[in-house]
Length: 109
Image (tube, rainbow, N blue to C red):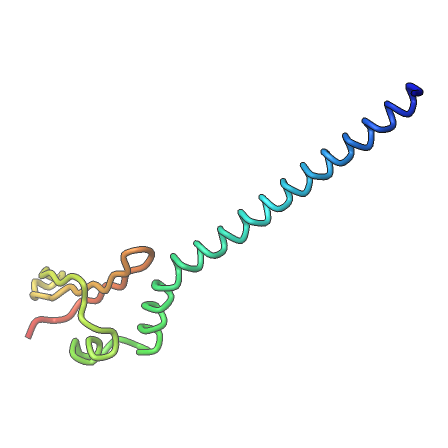
């Protein structure tokens, strides 16, 4: 058997291994990109929903606490504070645990 035939055979085998490496690397990169997009969407979707709920309400100035709770649901956190004029206010927060939060203050009455 000629030395050239042996080198040619191993050259073909090496080419196949290189092609397999390229294929595996390409599929890994593609799979990683797809996983990134799926996880990114899964994390952002609830925050988008909360944001769209408040965008659908339009301008919140002048809306009552009851109107906002009717549209967005009960707040996740409620606390009391004092505004710059010394009036008691209620601070309500609607929080999406992953990405987003909305805070509104209401005058106590």
